[in-house]
Structure formats: structure tokens, C-alpha cells
Image (cartoon, rainbow, N blue to C red; front, side, top):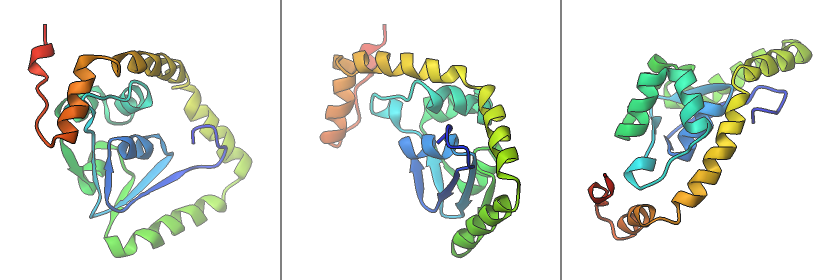
Amino acid sequence: MRDVPKPVIARVQGYAIGGGNVLATICDLTICSENAIFGQVGPKMGSVDPGYGTAYLARVVGEKKAREIWYMCRRYTGQEAVAMGLANKCVPADQLDAEVQAWAEEICRRSPTAIAIAKRSFNMDTAHQAGIAGMGMYALKLYYDTEESREGVNALKEKRQPEFRKFYK
């Protein structure tokens, strides 16, 4: 999505939790309805997005808020997402499609080359995060082979709270 020369608009009607939240973060623009719910669940179940989901989120909403989102695994409304900079606009659910269409049509009235250059320029500021993401995914692969990770998966399957305290040293 970051390499596509055209702007990518996230349209969030319901839940953007975990990977959905990362996708909404990575998109160039995010428009949501009042029914939208954003948040992370990774650490609740023994997972994390060690690249754009963490590093780029910190750029988007600020480090303190990004840490809150990842450490606390809380949920945020569409209005809260706009207030923190995670979404551009929140509209009533019945107006979401029309609003996304209006934004897309407005962008289409702009110079496509200028837009593509602007997008690349914005992305250059965080291009190093692609390397961080690659390293993070490698580390995550190693983590998924641990007892700690398996505890999160098993707890989810068994519909119980994971017992992560035993892994704190």
C-alpha cells in the first residue's frame, strides 16, 4: 500500500482491531463511521506487529498514545481515532460510502504525478521502518516458537485469560 503511487483510503465501518488497525494506520487516509472501533489485541494474546504496526503508529499518533494502544489493548471509537490522528474523519454510518467517494473524487481532480511525488516524499521520512519491519518479522518468527507465545494461542483456543505473569523475569 505504501508503494502504490495513488493514495489508499481506508474505509472503516466496524472493527479495525489488530491487523485491521495496522492496515488503517498504513493507509494514506482513513475515513470511519461512528460505528468504527480501533485497537490492538496482540499482547493480550501473545503477539505483536514489530514493524509498521508499532513504529509507524508512533509516528501517526505519538509515542505515548501508540504505547498505550499496544500495551493496554483498549478499544477506541471513530471519534477518538480522529482526535488522536489515527483517522482523518468520522461520519455517521449511512454517510460513510458517500464521504469516501467524495474524498476519492476530490483527489482525482488533482495532478496524479504531484500526488505520487508527495506520497513518495511522505514515505521517505519513514522508509527506514521497512528495515525495522523485516527484522521484527524475523524476531517474531523466533518468538512464535516459544512457550510464552503458545500460552497466548492456547488461552485463545480455550477461551480463557492467558497466564503471562510466569514469563516476567
